[in-house]
Image (cartoon, rainbow, N blue to C red; front, side, top):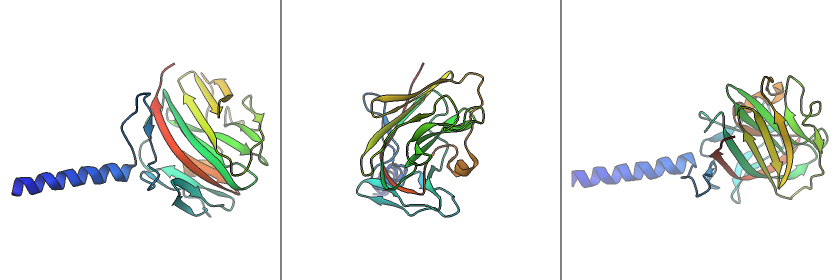
Length: 213
């Protein structure tokens, strides 16, 4: 009976651990979920001075409007720092500025893909050689609708960073011998996090996979 009881406790502990992390095994394409739609798991509210309310709502991470910033950050070592892809779906639920500032690791540094910044339309990487998303070669403009889901994907390799919004490639930049960093306002999301600026958003289907050149 003691052995059976111990086996049951170990099984329950394993199930509890899996539920807490919010991670799953990789699918046939190598994608692994980083959010189970039920709990924050390894995510936590970012340490912004006046973060918006963070809650799980209808299978999403709902990020309330911060003053000016709000968001979440990954609590453990990120799944990878090189040769990987990150993908998520994001929706601006209220406001007029960036609804997804995806900060991601690159070796020992981090960089941010800004989606809808500088009044709602600018996309790009912050920062490359200390020039932010409005001032470097990745700068572009797009129109975003409130309450519409957008699929955002970033691919990081040692020589290049690429990014897509839905099926449109918006970033394709060589980064060998370049300095990658984040703006000081978003340092609370290092090394992996998602932030907004005076804007509320919803995030879902966050996933990761290893990749190669």
